Image (cartoon, rainbow, N blue to C red):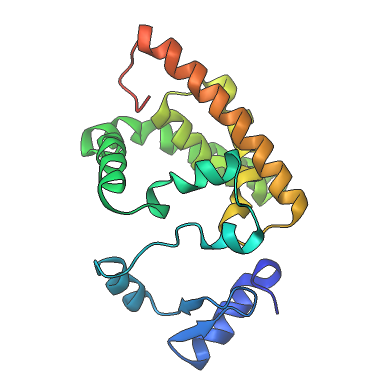
Length: 194
């Protein structure tokens, strides 16, 4: 079975056999128990995934690799701490509390839409839309962010050449958008992450 095609069944079967499993495609060791994952997440000896998947897929350069290399969870040390301290400001109790009402409204609307249509994927953009709110993305632009997020989501697994091309296009477009937004917002700052 493949993680990409049948994630929950594969993980359940692996967990039933023991605390560790090996991903056949990558050779990576997968930790199966939540307590073990939590212990490892707090162990300073453990390094992040870095660019291992990108190296394995042959993505040796370009905007997708550059973006992935700078993500908070693919970096270590001072750079990681600097990025984390910037982002953590958006998750203070006050800033999260300010979004609570909007989050409840968005969740209620997403559940109602899924109930009416039977389409759970329609509700899956809720997380992206909430991140857009934290960033300060205008409501009318949330749909394009959702499209970019969908194209970028495969970067956490082994991608096909088509997925690599789609993700590369998405990151180039998203970075251009965010650069323009940051330039505009530098002249008219708000209370959001940007």
